[in-house]
Image 1 (cartoon, rainbow, N blue to C red):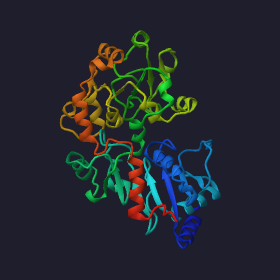
Image 2: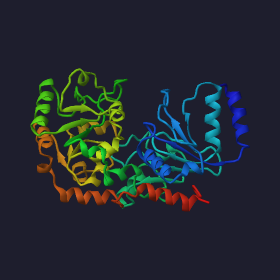
Image 3: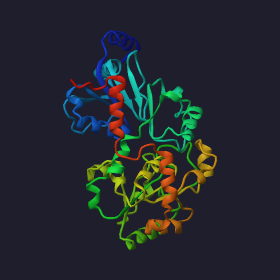
Image 4: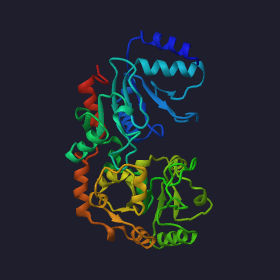
Length: 385
């Protein structure tokens, strides 16, 4: 679509009145905080009273069956029809709830709540700053305590009055649990951040973990890890970062180690956080899922041996990482095998409970409900007649 045509259509759409529609965005689509909030809206019958528009990333066809009054539009439209639909939705929808990409306001009268991608752990300041995010009405967080206010206001640049400490909707299932996963037996979830990007080398770390698993360097170690899991009668569900290069890992098949990627989740008909909710323990590093998993009260293993190098690429909001982030620190392959074999023997529950309450003002399963009721009260959202 040419710039002149786009400008003409934009000026035309500005004349149209705002509708009480809502735009939702997450990446992957239909996931994360916005996805959990969406499921809550459906239970409330919101789509019987207003339209829900999902912003879709990429060009893959949408195969998900959508209820009435729920539709999609492309963030990278092709052709007149897709461009027109995108412009119309962005300029005539009153409410915006985004999570990963920034769906900025287009006109006066729009209400935007950014649910964020997680509490601060590693920060890419070119992304995590208020100027880039754009004007919003509220920014959802899990805690309003001073340590987090300082990070959000002084580092990210958010006005303090924008912070909305109601908890993350995606975390509700971690407290509530998921019936499907109770049939899977014992398993551990491993969710690392990426070190080697599948599409580029710029910005990669020099530390090389060929299988995407910190502390696992050789095929022999991978087989030993598989044997340790077999001996402990449990599986390891390895959830790679979407950007992680897994070519070497995929060349080897391990019966007690499964790659729980998006295809795996679809095959098992669960969401990411439903899978995590049933885990006996979590292994992670600089991922914000660390804070979320604290709500389960279960053991956490931390692979942060390359922290010094990692935080040359990202900003660390803490002066002393190991003092602030509690869990069992895995600094060798032997410690990794010990943790996955017997997580309970490597867990200081008192420490984890203390940091849980530091990171979460609410520890129940009512975050989606609180957000819904807040938007109703403050912004007249989904007014029931």
